Image (tube, rainbow, N blue to C red; front, side, top):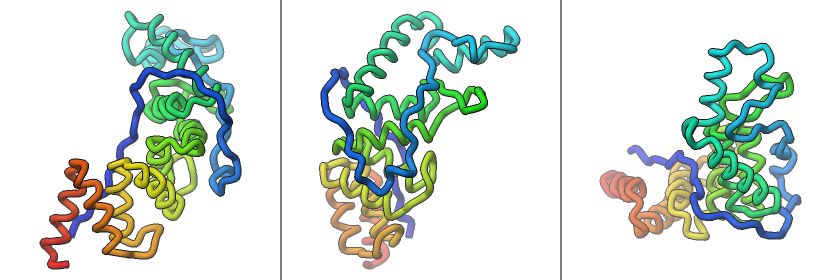
Length: 224
């Protein structure tokens, strides 16, 4: 029987506003997730440290990475990124989560300690997800749970993934509910409990989640 989990990042597209408040720090994951680094670039421009020694062709390729939306939207993209970064630093969990998604996908560009431009930065993404998750933001809890489940940006830790999925699922996050059901069913990161697995699948299915419906059908077909 194939019981599946959803492996996608939950992105926030809402209009972002700044808010006060500092993320908590008394968490077991704190030592595994780096703080946001200062080595970031603005969308819409190529800093000198990135372009030094590059050919025109390499600069053009780099510019495509920095400005995935196209050259015509450079100014708008740069202003959007500046506003997002300001809101994230001010403590807005929605902005922090969105910034994490951008670093994970490579829409925002960073570099490693040797100065090499990275295609994406899962460690920096996890750091921003962590700060939003600490504030109880469900999308970030789900995203960080995926990072722990997959061992991306943080050491793989299925128990931590379960805890994060549970926090998001309890807030009604449908994909977290399905993932939590899958982990209860398989016993990954938590004691196997088919009854709890079905309960979470049912919660997700009630919200229209097709994967959860398929999982329930698979369990029913097996005669469980």
